Length: 189
Image (cartoon, rainbow, N blue to C red; front, side):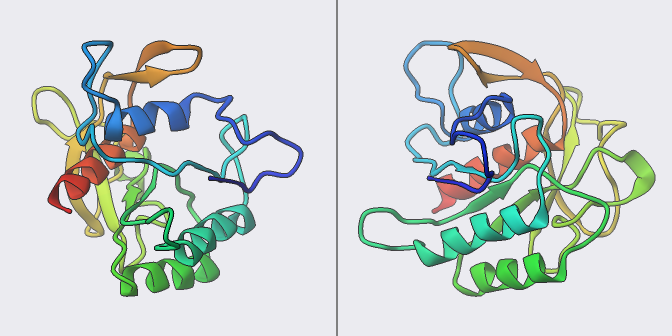
């Protein structure tokens, strides 16, 4: 992958990315849990720092990298999954996302955890697939952002997945629902 965070190594030292990647593609090996698309391969790009924050510049660099290598002969990018968001949109990020979608690469984004406060960017952009979260009863989670931009809802409450140091953890958020959708799209592909 690529590290877009200056002064940090390329590894997930926060746990969020590891959890999301497990939801997409954890192997079916009788250990822990299995991902939605266990035969899918993930190219991990570090766009957020070890505390879970980042800049639009770093995220744009990550998206441009996906566009650049979408099929370089050794790697192929079929889907972009973004379990992140913010309240202020970035027109530059939206332009790169539009290029990815126009190139046939769906960009799937977490709607956000602001409840009725509205859908975060980049999920609110026109060409992304915005994913809200529901619980084990099929009810939209109270924390899940809601709004007309939401395209789908997937499981996002107490989701058991891979975590740091060969552990597993239960996390909640639209960040967990987003990789469920990415896994479904991977299966369709």
